[in-house]
Image 1: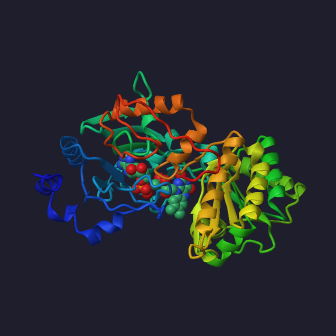
Image 2 (image 1 turned 45 degrees about the vertical axis):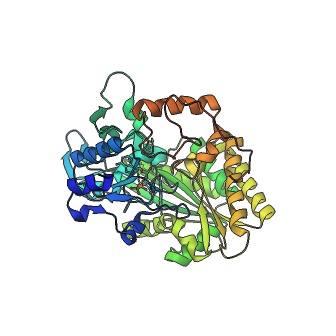
Image 3 (image 1 turned 90 degrees about the horizontal axis):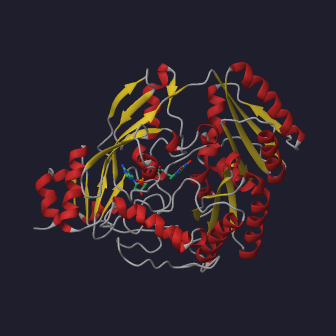
Length: 472
Ligand SMILES: Cc1cc2nc3c(=O)[nH]c(=O)nc-3n(C[C@H](O)[C@H](O)[C@H](O)COP(=O)(O)OP(=O)(O)OC[C@H]3O[C@@H](n4cnc5c(N)ncnc54)[C@H](O)[C@@H]3O)c2cc1C
């Protein structure tokens, strides 16, 4: 009896995939350069079915990987060729909505945007808004502690998840909630990238839609002037719902892809969104415009309608995919720096472009220093991909050097596990491994992700060290 025999006995034929052609659909996530074909894919429809699959994995000692919509950008949902891929795409029910308590309970495959769509007419919304929100699943958001443009004011997924039902790596069904006494297991699970089990029901906070929202597009001659405006806005005590910045290359790409109409001569644009009581928004908008003008902005456009607002956001939200219009291949990097170091880090990225002859388009959540450099290269030009990878790694070194982090919101996954020793000591990593082992002593839940040298509980730690810029 094999794992596949057992799964075939548990599920109807259309929910266990072993056909090699169909398996290829699942061989990568949004990070397409890490690929593996899963041994088998299962499409469960209930928590109990997920628990049953995980128990089969425990019985046979095989690994499993959860997959939501596969939009992850760090290879977190990369399958194992010796393991089971558990896909939540058939678990898309909104189980309950309780507006009195301002919460909803949803299945893990529900898309981020579907939650807002379910309550929008009644004046509510779900706040974390990754640019991938039309497609990405809330289960994936929980695993990655995903953010988005509006997390500057409202916080990340961890600030909006109130409780979880979880299938543990040995197949038990467990509930964890922010109301629990003792250790903050909910906090540990959110952002654990599928390594502590599978979230099967998610209770999220619903927010009341603000009375007023206004969106400003301000054009600057260069990125330094835009950066000064960001510091001055925050320094003035204004907390916009979002402050996003794009440089000239990112603007060029967005224009080519979605004709968003940003001023073509801009060296940088800032999108500043303000929300709250109408009177407050109005006075803050005047202040923000004055700051932008004072720091060199040569054009300011305030969206006069929902359509104009959507058009301003369209350029930003499509920026990752848009660079495909100006480059045959690219790496989406994700790092964080203190806001005060943005200028220096961007200058450092400029220097890397010159040193390696590689173009980098910058798109970022400027308000919280979350950079998304898009490292462009021609994958048919010999050596260019390798140079792009070096630039990409050096950008993370710059982030660390300035007191930042190797990921802001896309997670570590398989892609950045090698960078972990640049940020954490052996002792740090060992402590994290112990937490993981407390949930998953057999190391079956999404192994090979997050940690540079995955090991089972009780094994002696041996951490691979990387020097800055080194590519493993
Ligand atoms: C164009 C584009 C724009 C993006 N913009 C943003 C952005 O603005 N902000 C941001 O934070 N991210 C962004 N992302 C990254 C990505 O969309 C998020 O990480 C998202 O949360 C992944 O959700 P998913 O359903 O696609 O997860 P997947 O890619 O399927 O999986 C991601 C991780 O979650 C685990 N996982 C999935 N479901 C579960 C579950 N039920 N229980 C436990 N673990 C699970 C997987 O094992 C994997 O480790 C973007 C991606 C793209 C392609």
